[in-house]
Amino acid sequence: MPRHFNLLLLIMALLAAAGGMGWLTFVERQTDSLILAAGARSSEGFQLAEAIATVVNRHHPNLTVEVIETGGSLENSRLLDEGHADLALFQADASTSNRGRLVAILYPDAYQLIVRRSAGIRSIADLRGKTVALPTRGSAQFTSFWYLADHYGLTDTDLNWLPMSNRSAEWALISAAVDAVFRVRAPGDLTVKQLVEEADITMVPIDQAPALHLRKSSINPGRIPKGSYRGEPPLPEQDLPTASVNRLLVADTDLSDSAVYD
Image (cartoon, rainbow, N blue to C red; front, side, top):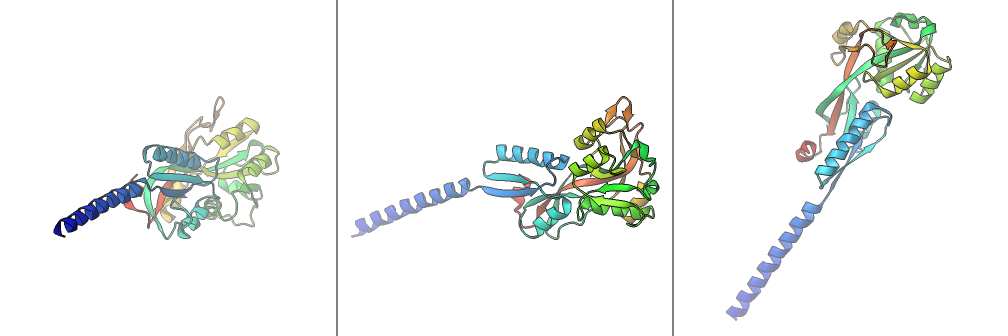
């Protein structure tokens, strides 16, 4: 009887060990799937998010990052708050998520006012009475424009403003349906470069960024380097002062530290 009992104990111990090893193997093979809300597909942020996802997916087999296209920072904030995204890119001067924590500052974006050369717009104040293509209503870029306009004493009745997609805004500027386009993008943005090739445009300086910083600390003085969009003749023609805001990578507060670290 004792011999049979000891044998039974041995078998149970072996089965328990095998089960434990199987469970560890199962856990190790489990893959965490994360959603990264990145903004417009044509933006630098989306391209950088895809690069991050590629590297993570290559070097961390237990972690999968999927990048999704969104309407921008404010939609990203909502997706994070509602639990539909685990990571997101934010424009620093936008309203941030209640569930977000900063992972990294990725790069600086610049306020860019792009105008038809024949429109006679040389300053923000010259937008009065002009027609401006703005980013879609409710986007962080849309909010940034009106913050800027308010600083220069412009209201929504002082100019004709049309919220539209990037492609629609480009077409409208090329066809002279609008006088100006506003973007918050990194200097050298490819969509602006393409616009330069098809329309006679220039760029307007935003020379009161230090004053904007006094009112909102997330806005900093910046510049768009001479020749960022064309070398000869250079566009801009000289280093162009502007306002700059950081593009941020933010994670859900419930996301594990190890996943964020990876």
